[in-house]
Length: 260
Image (cartoon, rainbow, N blue to C red):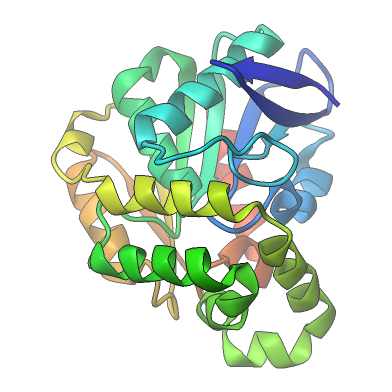
């Protein structure tokens, strides 16, 4: 699996599919790793060149001291594309990954084809919650917040019916470097792209979860209202909609990506 340097930080990447197929890069949410995209990668790798990477501070990528910024996370993604020699790729990011995608679509639009922004927001509704979370992780570690995070990520019904999946996602959270996690919390806390995203001209699909309390439907609707021509798809899910509703999520993104 390739590893690319992003200004001194190693970014772990996995690539599947044929080299000459259209490229799509998947960017993970806060607290997960590239494994969150397993079902999407398996479903589309015969038709796309699937690129997944661990955002800095997550998975097998480096976790240098923070705070980080959306610009920093965006430049990491560009380092991945440059390392692979890819001039342009479609983008699919969920939550923090969607925030990174908005930065890229504004600052490096020539590198992005079609843009999927899932369960994300242009600005956190309550930046103070991130300060609270940062203090909790710094004091007690990721184990102290894991169950509360999972309750936000998935509906109660999903958590009860898919305990193995929930356990795997919990292990991903608690296995992170706390320093990298809180550094990414800072990037989300400090971000405000509400007005800048009006400059985005790329074909854009916004995915929202009907039961998402982390980035509610209103956040998705604001993005759609600001990006000309953006389309909204609603899924019967909470925050990590691609894991809770994988067939519906995959179907929505593949139909959208195959148009371009």
